[in-house]
Amino acid sequence: MRATIKDVAKYAGVSVATVSRVLNGSDSVKESTSKVVQDAIQKLEYEPNYLGRNLRKRETNTILAIVPSIEHTYYSGILQGIAEKAHTLGYDIVISFSNSNEKTEERLMGMLSNRTVDAVILLGTRLNYKLLNSLNEKYCISLCCERVENSNILTLTIDDEVASYDAINYLIGLGHINIGMVSIGIEGETIFSAIDREKGYIKALEENNIPFDDRLIYRGTYDYSSGEKALEYFLTLENPPTAIFTVSDLLAMGVIRKAIENHLPIGKKFSVMGFDNTSISETFMPSISTVDQPCKQIGNDILSMTVDNLMHKDTHTGRHFAQHRLIFRESTQKE
Figure 1: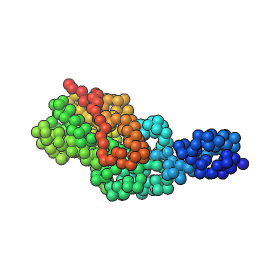
Figure 2 (figure 1 turned 90 degrees about the vertical axis):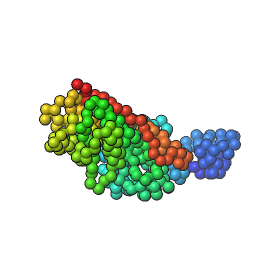
Figure 3 (figure 1 turned 120 degrees about the horizontal axis):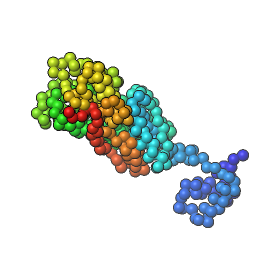
Figure 4 (figure 1 turned 60 degrees about the vertical axis):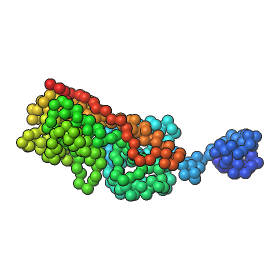
């Protein structure tokens, strides 16, 4: 029969509370008493129930990462960074996929109230800001990749508006003045990263005295086929764009595929710029110029900041920015 904490207390001639304090590393126990208790633990081969103890202390050393989709490789870099930093700090990571379903997210958030996990990191969410703010008052919640308007929870993203602004200025610098944009417009869903990137696109045009034409923004889904459909649409315009900026590398691939079918000189007179710098953007032919998001670093940082908030409530609040950079490849070569 396994020894219990009561057996240890009886063997050492101390109270159960004293044994508990020794197990928790309390400084209130005399060194001589602590030694007696440690000897009893060793003699009886007592194994503390750390899980039960942690649950009573409202600690599990486990953090839940909720991912909107299993389809986008962009998230893998974030998760790698989260897992790497968690290991360093002594935390375990549980990963679950919500499929961008609000009810699924709400159910998963229940792991906070039943103390299965200490904190939740959302890699995008369908939950509204009122619910997020309410949950954040009771629990430790963080958000990365996508912001939520009016939420006050810790959020780490790149500055999507500035990143888009930089990309459009680069294309203008190549000599393009008729620039199309492939964005996201999913019915019933607000995607603030896409909204911010459209703002950056418009701002760059205006500052370069290029009239904004709403017909040059195509809004679809994240699917590869949406990039193809976007170029098909642009080619029906009286003056088709000579450069296309997309809000994801996958969309850029669809644009390029359709451009090749239409014999457009990619990277010379016709430029395509992606977003995210996923691994396939470098191996795709032609390789894709893109906006790099430091995914692994974002994962590292959001985990560290979340743990800081666990240790000291509200150490990090509001929105924080990671640094983006432009990557230049074959799809935007100069002539």
